[in-house]
Every structure is written in C-alpha cells, then in structure tokens.
Image (cartoon, rainbow, N blue to C red; front, side):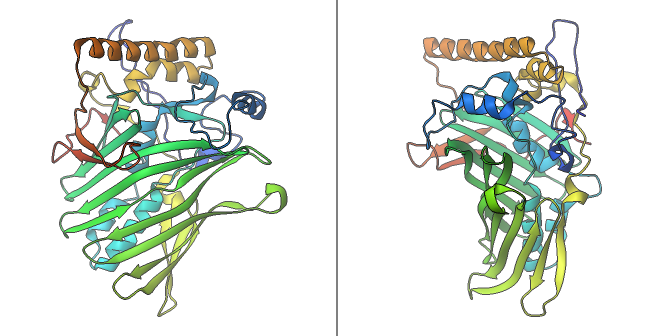
Length: 396
C-alpha cells in the first residue's frame, strides 16, 4: 500500500503528501499503484477516447480524477533517478570503474534502471507552469522544474558534489492515440557528466506503449541510444515485446542491444535480458557473460520520500501543489478529488491571467531554455546553478 507524509502548520495550511515510488511490486493485480481501480476501466477508457481520431495528440486531454495515479509527472521523472534501494549504488559505480569501457557499461546499466514499471489505465498529473520537485538521496540532490506547458517541457538537474557527478534532462512526453493503443514518445535528451573523468554521456528515453485492445497492458518500447563523445563508445538498446496470438502471453519487458566502438564499428558486448529482471552483457571475443543490472536489487520495495524540513519546502513543490488531490485519490474520495483538481487548475488560470494583465513574461527559475524549432520538440535546458542544493525532502 501507499505510504504518506503530511506536514501542516494548522488546519488551513496545504498538505505535503508523498507517495511510494513505482517499484516492481506495483504491477501486480493484487497490489496496484494505489488502493483503487475504477470499475469497468476498459469501458471508461474507450468512452473517454470515442471521439478522438487515431493519430491525435493527447497532450492536452483532460482526464477525470479516476484516471490519475497520485503523483505528478515531475515526481515520476525524479523518482527514476533518486528512488533506488539502499544497497544499490549504480551511479557511484559509473564513476568508480577503472576503464572507459567499464564505466560505459555501468552507464548502460544505470540508464536501464531509470525504466520503471507503471500501471494500466492511469496517468500522472500534468505539471503546472513553474512547478518544481526537489529531493535529496544521500549526496545526490535532484531538482526538476516544469519550464513550459505549451509545449509541456520538464527539466531535471541533479548533482553529487562528493562524486563530482551531474545529470541534466530536458524532455517532453507526447502521447498519441493509435486506435487500439496510446503511444507516448518522450522527446529530448538526457546527459550524464562524470566530471572526474571528463566524460559526457548522452542518451534518450524509450516510449511508453499502452495497449487497450485486444489485451490491456503497458510496456516500454523503442530504441535507446547512448553515446560518450570523449571515448567514442556507443550503445544501442532495443526495448521489445513478444506476444503470442491475439496478444495473449509473451513478454513485454525484453531488452536487446550492443555496445560498440564507433571508431572501428567493432561490437564489444551483446546485451540481452529483461529490464524488470536481469540484463546481461556477453563479451564478443571471450564469450564471457556477466550480469550488469538486477532490477530486484535496485527498484524493489521502494519507500516514499519523507519531509525533513517542512518550512523549507517551496510553494511550487509538486507534493504541495497536488497534496489535496493526492490525498483524495488515496482516500477514494472522488468528489473531493474533483474539487481539488479544479482548484489547482483555477489557481493556475488566475495566475496566468494576472501575468498577462501586467504584461509580464514568465521565465523558469532554475533553467535557461532554448528551442530549435517552433514545435518545441527539440529543446535544450541549461541549469542556472552549478550545483543543486540539499533538499528539504529526502528519499530513504
């Protein structure tokens, strides 16, 4: 079940509500991502989409509270970085390996660890403009900001000053209806800097595929490319699904790929496994096989973050902005959930109108953002500060 933290200073103060991150357990039917699933979910979902044409962009589709799980998209992005078990240390391993190939292989494993399970038929809240999410885990400090809502762009900056590690993400999820499924492409890039080694790794994200018919399900799909400019090492990961007749059975969590030297095009390792179990690499010369990623060790039994300093939580924090809605969903109070969702939307609309009246142009507080085309699908986010400060919310 979900765990929750609330910090209040009297009855009128808004609630800070934090929920368990997605881990391997959330996919089971006996324990979904929260304690409620709408009856006749498939029928409700098809009814919601009955007037939507195949190929239509669902970015601005307004969902009723029944179709939300209790967290913002910013929190989902952040959790994929800071929510790991206490005995796993993939990010530090990337930094502490001795050779460029060993470090690159560890970066591949870390990239796979950001792939998290989710539940069918529910979606995160769409972050409002200027919303932030700020959490620390050990020496890793993670800060996210919704830098744009039209188009919707989320930026992430995370630093570990002890290990001298930095990561920067700038991405936009674009969900489209495909008739019997919804495909959510994640545009943008992710950058990981290992400053001690002068190495920069660039990578993208797989797309989320939500099958409605013939058998409902959720899977990650597509190609993830990882490249280190300084060493010339490259990886290509293919997230695949294997289904039998009519979509029954099969496996929706397969990974296949390779690591190669781009200067010679020699394949150094073959990659094979399942992102929710183990992933192996096979040395193409020696034939030796080793496990580089074990999902059970990294993303099982995860716990909700906790509030360490309630007064230090920004008013733009996701867990504060959506606190009432999250509490209502956890409590299955759908009338209250509807009111809470409308309240957030009305306050956001009022703020935007007041800004327009004053002739003010909103700018992100923590990032500089540039777009290379009008669609906004190719953007770049640069953090304003070199290091992310410690957060008032911590991940156990």
